[in-house]
Amino acid sequence: MTDMHDNEAKEITLVGVVGAGTMGQGIIQVAAAGGMTVLAYDEKPQAAETAKSKIANFLGRAVEKQRMTASEAAAAIKRIIIIQKFEDLAKADLVIEAIIENLEIKKSLFAKLESVVPQHTILASNTSSLSITGIASNCEHPQRVAGFHFFNPVPLMKLVEVIPGLRTESWVLDKLMDVGTRMTRKPVICADTPGFLVNHLGRGYMPEALRVLDEGIAKHNDIDCIMTGAAGFRMGPFSLVDLVGADVASPVMDAIYQQYYHEPAYQPSQILNLRMQGGILGLKTGSGFYEYSKGKKVEPEPVDTPQNRSMSVHIGNGDVEGTKLLTAFIESAGVTIRSDASDDTLTLLPLVGTGLSTAIALNGLDPTRTVAVDTLFGLEGVRTLMVTPATSNEVRAQAHGLLGVDNASVAVINDSPGFVSQRLVAMIVNVACHMAQRGVSSPEDIDTGARLGLNYPKGPFELAEEIGANRILKILEELEAFYGEPRYRPSAWLRRRVDLGLPLDLPDAVL
Ligand code: NAD
Image 1 (cartoon, rainbow, N blue to C red):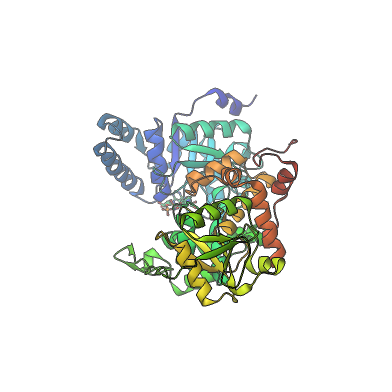
Image 2 (image 1 turned 90 degrees about the vertical axis):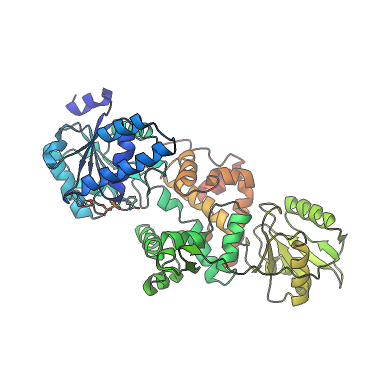
């Protein structure tokens, strides 16, 4: 038994944090608030002191808002000990590194840490993009090195990723899970892979939204309205990119695409790179996909709903659930439903996956009088209508007037397999399935990561359960067949479970 294994039984009470910048400050705060004593170190003079006084202000506000008592806040502040000498980290049970994102600098810091701490001390990195195995490569005892990845702003973001390098021993992960929980975080385990869990999972939403925009299928504000108003996401992809900044979002997209050796599913769009070059970064520059005035988004003018609505509708072949929803909606609008299409009838198709042109050709429909409706997320919120280049302006206005009869918002988009919401959600689920298949993380942790790290209303496996994994597979198959691109190929994980009628979150049998 090495003395490293003696540490398995010991609770971590003394935590060192190296680097007291944006992330280090947050980590120091949650560790101290979680009852641990923290040794705060930064090579820059006064940086740790500044962090401590900002934490005191933050906790003071928490007391005012009655989120903690004054004595709890005072005790947490007292547990933060600023150290001037690196060697004073020697007694720490765990050291969390939150310094500059540079592999060589981190590698030498970890080697230097090994020269002052005993063999059982866990060494953790808060890196966002470097491999834990690489950071540990200079270490004499890489088995006690792991990733401990927090999110910004730390006190508000409840998730923490626990990442084993290739040589990390399992007791180290158990300890970090425990420490993360005592810091009131929700720890998830993920493999040492590009983007870890959250940044990898994010390859579904924003990149596919950019692809939809790039192809001229829908305007950015319509995509945002559909994703928030129909699919229930808290923020649309273009509001999100404006908030994060094109200068941050674009390099992350590039890095993950490169690190996965040009995996087509993760291909970024040139749209964002161009904006980054032009300094059209979003909120921080006052101009991005939206314009900002005094830090507030200037909402685009809403489109008026046409008054002339169709009085005779035929519902063509489409999704069974969607047909029921659409029938109930048309009946409640007092509009006649005809069993056949005729010269004065609007044909509506509740499509799942299939593009409108494809459906018109397959069913021999009149292209001038046929419009598709997205029913996947119901018809309660924002509604999406899809038209083709052949749709007459009159029919388009009639369909818009009918779908907006109760003043609901209607987004009219160009033809696309899977509309907007179906495409984006299918890509989110498919990326999650690719991740589960690769062993990046478990379906349960992927769902947690989506909710707490990306603020999605539900995790991808929960979403697929609600929508039906077979419908997600159909959307992807239609996209793949239409574009002929491996970007849309359904994950083996998804296809296998749909083929067998098994729940999508069921793990593989072996390994
Ligand atoms: P930051 O620039 O705000 O802070 C870094 C701090 O580390 C500075 O105070 C600096 O003086 C100190 N430092 C640099 N080299 C040092 C050394 N060798 N020894 C001691 N102190 C040193 O950076 P940050 O945003 O807090 O990022 C820190 C780490 O966290 C990076 O690895 C980053 O990738 C990761 N991260 C950042 C975010 C984020 O949104 N900012 C989110 C998750 C993870």
